[in-house]
Length: 71
Image 1: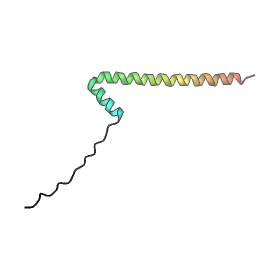
Image 2: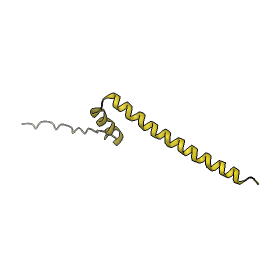
Image 3: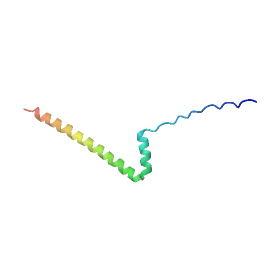
Image 4: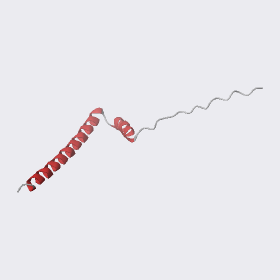
């Protein structure tokens, strides 16, 4: 009797999703499309407000320096 030929071992590599990808997948399951869009729009508004605040602070500093430099 002959032994059955050994089957080659198959190794499957599965990519582990990033945290962001996993979070978006959970978000898509829990929320409808409109809620996702609203949340992204709100976050973009927060980022834009932060950018404007940073620009305002930099402008105030530049104005103070220009006024302080005058005789």
